[in-house]
Image (cartoon, rainbow, N blue to C red; front, side, top):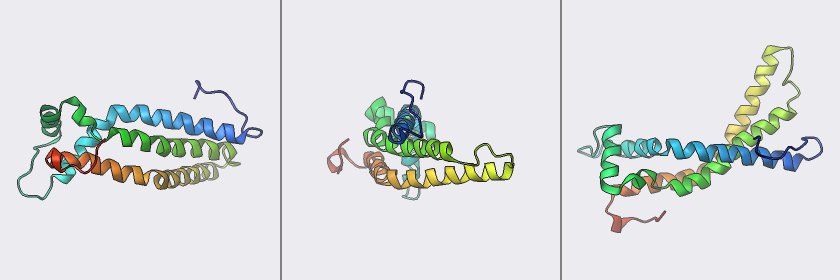
Length: 159
């Protein structure tokens, strides 16, 4: 957030909100690049269950076989739509949470229950809104991650 300009929440609400959204989106995109191979492997392992002989023997085997067949880039299959999806998700989540928290009249309440309850409402509102914003991107991401189960000529999506 420090790399963005400062904005007064009372006089420049739109700028304040967009700075919160942008900083949250950037943080989400950065963290996604680190954890994406594990998310990819989790999706592949989940789709490998119940269809006869399992293709993978666990997380390490899934990662090893993916790298062997597709290179390290194979672990990032579908990352483009994930980055496009994480920016509105994390942007909405962090941006809305920071904005709601900034306007929360109980943020500094002496009553611990009121303060905790109001923060909980801010967090839940942010999480629900972020889920609605990002759902279409998440659906496409899962489909892109599962494509390598089929021969490449049968792939429906590119990306």
